Every structure is written in structure tokens, then in C-alpha cells.
Length: 330
Image 1 (spheres, rainbow, N blue to C red):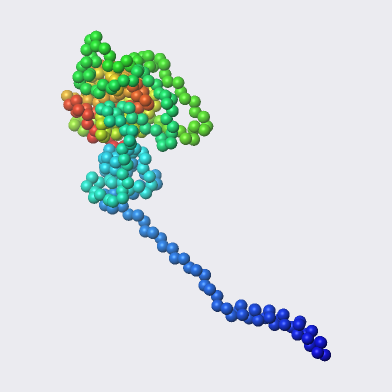
Image 2: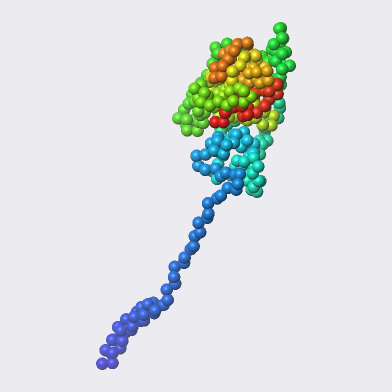
């Protein structure tokens, strides 16, 4: 009998221990799950006189929306490239806006040129694009010290028997040997940045009247350089052979070549104002010819320049002034 009781106890004891463990677990308090409070930051608000760049904005649209000129926004915000603005960037859009601490200011490039005609040599490439030495450059004459445009230089160039200011190839010779097109591969098509395809019709969409003269843009294209610092005008990018039109009614004063300007055309609009069109592939008008606003006067090129562009100046009594004062906002 005693042996049976011992055997029964050996069988029951494990069951009693398991029941005790279950009872202990059921009575232990449970630790609540941690709660993480998340706060939603308030939307960023620009101070008076400033604007925060939104997705899809361009500097032209921001200037037009706030009734300002593109050149003023570039100057107030110290922008080296008007096309390089980022979402969330704070821009000053009023002349009398108070300074804001922490607003990013773009510094002038260390390799920027400081000579009198630097605007005609400035080359703007997309970020990350390599600059192969000599690739895609179509120079029509040997490089040398530039001779800035002036009435004295123009008079010297027009003297009978005077030596040319620069050995620039005649327009007819340039037209006979067009630049060889660069083949486009599928790999380069993904990274290629193409300027908008310009047409003469696009330049007739807007005019602006200043000093009693109606002005328009001389060509469509991306703005490569603005009137600031040592720059005497603006640079407009485009394609070789793209039409360049007269910015206003006038009379052709000079057609020829000057060092630093390449194939050049100058149009007089009245006794005080004249416009300058430089680096042309070919000039389509002659000296003394009357031209009207929007009339093609040249084809864009890269004579005495490292890239295809139009260098455009407005001069008042022989001194360069900001073309943005005369051209319509776009």
C-alpha cells in the first residue's frame, strides 16, 4: 500500500508544479506597450519680402508673380545661375525686405573672369558635365587679347585700308563649312540638357516700350549670363544658325568683326540708343539698311566664342546699360 502511495505521489507532483506556474503567470501584472508621441511640424512661413521655392517654380515665374524683374531677383539673392534654384530655398522678392539670418548666398565662382568683355567668354555647362579640352569648339580665328567694343575701335575698323581688328573668317566662309554635328547615342540622350527649340514667332509674343521705343527679345533661349559686374550685356544660349532678330526699329550702323565680339552687327534706334549683336555665325543685313522690330538680321553662332550664343548689349550714348530695363519680362 505504501509503495502504491509513493508511486501515485510521483505522478501527481509534476502536475501540481505545472499548475502552480500557470497560476503565477496569470496573476503577474502586464507592462503596457510604450507610446511614442509624434508632433507634426508647422509649415515653413517666409518672412515679409521673401518667398520659399515650391515644386515646379522657375525664377522667371517667381519674378513675374511678384512684379519684379528677373535681373533684380538674381542680384538680390546673389545667384550665379538663374536656373539653379531648389525646392525649399528662400528667395528675396522685395527690394526693401529686411535681411534674414541664415539665408543661403551663392558666392561668385573662383574662376570667374574679370576682364572688360568677360560676358562674351563665359561658358555655362550643366552640373557634372565634363569639359573636354577642345571638344565641340569651332574657333574662326586665333585667340588673343580682346579689344573691347567702343566708338574709337569701331571708327578704326571702318577706316579704309585699316587692318582688321581680329583675323575672323568671313561670314561666307563660315557658311560654306558648317560645324559637323555630334552624333547622339542612347547613353548620352539620358544626360543631355537641350535648350528649348527657338522660333522667330516666339520672340514676337511680348514687347515693352521704353524711351518711346518698343523692344522685344532678340532671340529665344536660356539666359547664360546677365548684366552684372564686368558684364556689358546678356548672353542667350541657342543653336548654330538660330535666327537673331532686331530688338527694335532702327538702322544698321555697323557690320563686321571685332576681337572679343566675332561677327558683329550694331543697330541705331535713335540719337542715344543702339543695340549690339555679337558672335553671329552669319550677318544677314548691310550697313545703312533700315530694319524693323522682329526682322531677322543674323544667325546665331560662336565666332570668337567657345560656345554658340548671342551676346546682346544695349548702349545709351555709347555706354552699356542693363538690357533688362528695355526687354519685356518673360
